[in-house]
Image (cartoon, rainbow, N blue to C red; front, side, top):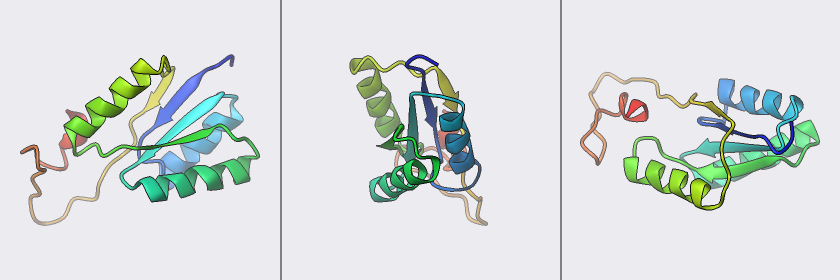
Length: 114
């Protein structure tokens, strides 16, 4: 795939991590991996590069509970001329017993959908 870019949310573990590995194996020239913690997603990108022997992983701090953060990240990708050819919206959270409201006033379990 010539210069194809994939973006995977929630890539620090589980299905997102496995999907990022698979996309690299399928030949994507760049796989943007996202997570809420920049340090953790940088470690994830480095580990994926070692495991796949393909230095195609780009870490991106992305908190889907924060609409401003999401808009900033998307705007940066657009400004850099990096169109995403494949998007996997995998990020999620395990709901607790108490209802959690984000700083933007959105129920946390629904924030990634907005």
